[in-house]
Image (cartoon, rainbow, N blue to C red; front, top):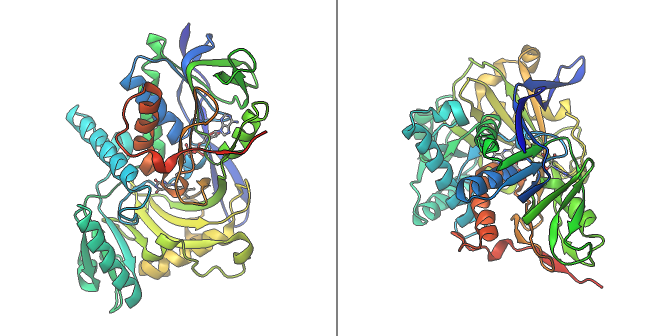
Length: 455
Ligand SMILES: Cc1cc2nc3c(=O)[nH]c(=O)nc-3n(C[C@H](O)[C@H](O)[C@H](O)COP(=O)(O)OP(=O)(O)OC[C@H]3O[C@@H](n4cnc5c(N)ncnc54)[C@H](O)[C@@H]3O)c2cc1C
């Protein structure tokens, strides 16, 4: 029996910083919480980030299966809540392992935005969707040569792509500083979304299936163990949480972002099976300046160095040990907030915001957006937010998506690093097709879960 009730608000963790006081505040957004007294479903999805929620969505829309989503906290409490929202191909490489998945996923995001529009709904309102086009900006002659090559490759791969010299870039994006060595790769069909709006939209769609008894969510319930059919067989029958047993008669899908490695280790410890899930948390900061009217961005912009996650100036920080890098990313969301990013570093599971990194992000952005040089970060104490998230980093640069070898009915979908929003719908389709036994739209061989030797 599934019941729908208005409960206390869902809390998403957002960290607000002021130079004087560093406080963590929780922003409440009213939500409809869907709970169920039953404990058996066709599918249990572990993790309510963008990957888990879109997998649930795909199964609910594409089959008649019932689905439960279980999360140790709430959606947007993981990497998803910090995501900037680039749905971009510009910084991806044709022919790479993730290329087809990203292409398919972008097509699905575009289809979703179009279908909202066709229903008389506003994709901007529902998803924060904007087809801004993307500008990947180079500031040296070497970078511009590489960008020209990139534009050629992207065009060969079938995308609309154009190289812009400094003056052409200035015409498209007057807020950007250009000189003789500046140029950009421009993809007019790239888009952006707002992670929080997109998650709300997907949650709402999933919850519509609760009335049919096909959907339930269990938030603030960490998964702690695996249930196997007769206690020891190779058939997975669901998971244990801190509060209950949740049965997934057809499939259990682990989509727990950067926690997936340790969680899989824990889940498999009594199975005599070991899989290698080398996902690591890669911390990232974003600075959000609300209602920013000192400049306007027509496009999403990103520095060319982002592609290699190159390190920019980060004085006073122990760059080597943390492998800290800061690359300029800048977007303007549908409500006029300027969003600046982003940092990458390996500091374990720490999510404390670091004011020094915020300052580096601001200064790096000012190298590209000269208007920021006339302003001081201190001017925005009252209307700025800092978002911190842990990207699920995989050493080989691609997520693991597939069934877990040696066990039946257990799947993994994790490790999308800085591209999980962009690749979510394609990943969800891929996992759903696996569970339903349908042929995949994208070659799955690059993403398989690897079994370690076990005794
Ligand atoms: C600063 C920053 C900017 C980014 N910008 C972009 C961008 O522009 N475009 C883009 O495509 N991507 C971007 N990303 C990356 C994107 O946000 C991630 O790839 C994506 O959110 C990963 O989603 P996920 O669902 O795998 O993980 P998460 O969102 O981390 O979700 C995992 C969930 O699993 C839950 N969980 C963990 N352990 C357990 C357990 N034991 N039991 C139950 N639940 C558990 C967690 O609570 C969490 O909710 C960005 C990331 C950061 C940090």
